[in-house]
Length: 234
Image (cartoon, rainbow, N blue to C red):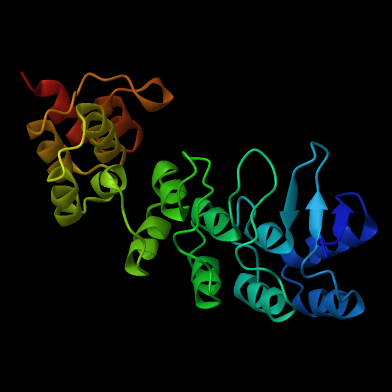
């Protein structure tokens, strides 16, 4: 049976969204008891996209009151932990928690069984770690790695994970991937991995994501010494 759908203006959708994002766990529990199919429902937006209640709990900017208790209440009522967003991407609630740097809720989702390697990111369909790194949500990125997430070449570069980066470089990736990883190392303010990638042929003049060079990406992230070092190279 397909999940129940509610348009976002439906009084029940409004009430449950308010309870979730205000941290009104008792009210959320009442709604879940009164509507047994609510935990698995989807709320449909004006553009036809649809989110689950766990997506509501992890929506930007995140950090909602009683977030952990909310996740536990929804999961206990039958919410599907890895149900994807329905729209231009397929992000799970874990992706959204990572994008909001919401560590407590991220941990609650993983503790409830969320798949740390679930695909669907807006970043090339990747995992929650792709979102966290791309959006500079460094606490979430590091917690995901601590919890067992596998870092790709560019993610390892951005996080300063030298051992993982060296292992990835041993597979002789194309220069384009190395240059992208160099940009990401600068985005993450990681000089050690930036030096390693330069030594492997990364292009420091590449104009990459958001129209920025690696030096400009470093500067945007507040890594001014790294940016100055890059620009001072011969």
